[in-house]
Image (cartoon, rainbow, N blue to C red; front, side, top):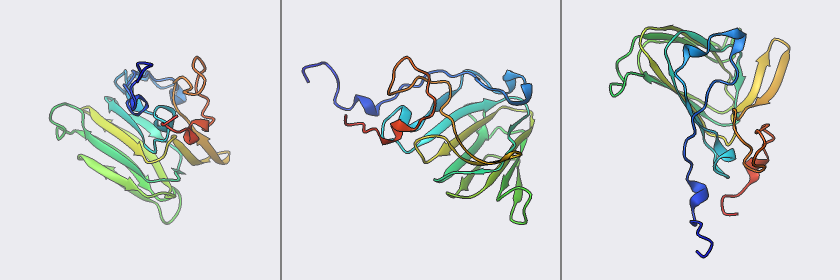
Amino acid sequence: MSDGKRKFQKLVYTFKPEYNEVVPDNADRDYVVSPQAYFRGACEIPGSQYNVGFQIFVKPFFLDKFPHKHEQDEYLIFLGGTFPNVFDWDAEIEFTLGKDGTDEAETYVITAPTIIRIPAGMWHCPLNFKRVDKPVFFQAALMQGCFGGTYELPTGTMEMYYNGPIECVLEPGKKCNTCKKCLTADWRV
């Protein structure tokens, strides 16, 4: 290649540290170890249909209060955050599958390393890290190119997407506003 670029460079993403940009209800930012690592899907590798975060919770925190659903499957992974022993666990986390406040909702209490599959279109949450006496490694892996979906808020149902405090891949120097144009970008270009 005469220009010095590698043929598949767009398929390689090097993690950048991220810090809490928004903390709900004026909570302390120290509920989770920072920096955190995220792979924000198509806005970081064009064409990607995978979005994942890597966080270590060290204090109780009500992470997600509102039921929502996504267009694709999501997997929530809860492991002990005292590496290398991911089974070193002392926490209690409540998570709801099905639409909260309906007959179909089921709340699970997570007291050991667990993975949960949330099929596309399934309502889920709240997600509450109620007790965290030992660090918890949390990973939310969504099989779509941008994080977000349909949320049931006190003001009504709303579609919302969020890519974090990152730069736009299509307009360098501009903060990502989750326009989703990168979802149709091709890594080959």
